[in-house]
Image (cartoon, rainbow, N blue to C red; front, top):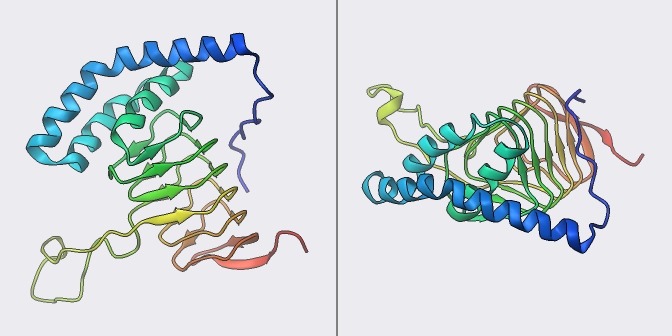
Amino acid sequence: MSDAPIPVPPSQSSPVKEAAKAVVRFVALVAVFPLLLGFWVNAALVGRNRALESSSQLLSLFPGISGQYLRRAFLQRVLAGCHHSALVEFGTLFSQAGAILDANVYVGTRCQLGLVHLERDVLLASGVQIPSGGKTHYFDDATKPIREQGGERRMVTIGAGAWIGTGAIVLADVGKGTIVAAGAVVTKPLPENVIAAGIPAKVIRNRFE
């Protein structure tokens, strides 16, 4: 489905290793505190979502493991939910503070995420886009430009253990354990434990046939 690397779940860590990680997380929090302070000031002036957009653009530029820790330290304090085991790679942008990242979530490079709930063990390959549903812009009024017609945002849920392939665009919920092929466009909800591909995405088969 994708040539993006898939992180291997870590084996049971020793107390020393866990303590070292805790220290690194604390250092990362100290490092991002100025950015958090700027976020809170901006949020009071322009709203949390606008403030998050600019902050996540800056944080997305830090590469490597240090970038992973910095992004996580920041996102844990500004998103509706972000587990300490979630991993967000280089170049990923967030636009909605209501997003939720559960335990062991992996978000690949250069993803764009809106109002989304990534449940436990979800994998996103590179370049995945999950905006806030399929109606963020209305376009039915011929007398107004689209930018003036408003829209609606809804939470898009990616079920536990699902894998979204490179470059997929997801506008609707994806069931637990489902695989979405690279380049697919999900316009309608997908059930659990299936493989879906195409534009628009359609179920090819059950994963366990």
